[in-house]
Length: 60
Image (cartoon, rainbow, N blue to C red; front, side, top):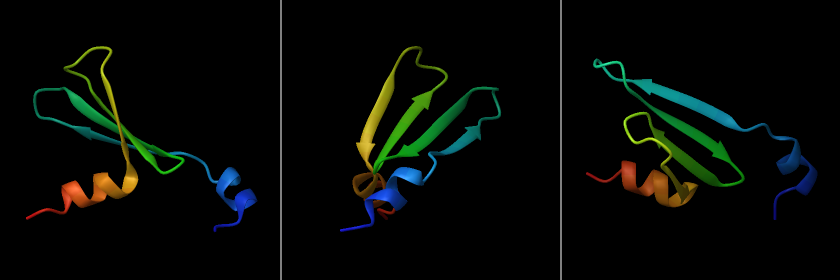
């Protein structure tokens, strides 16, 4: 198990991907979960486990 204090002190991480039409997708990682927000879908958030997120984007 990881050091609990190290896990708690780790800040959340953010990434924003902009599209050519001006919309964007925002990704936030915190506590082993990725939250995905699409600016074209108001008030909708998808939350997935980080391991599943990585597995899904790495599929060929």
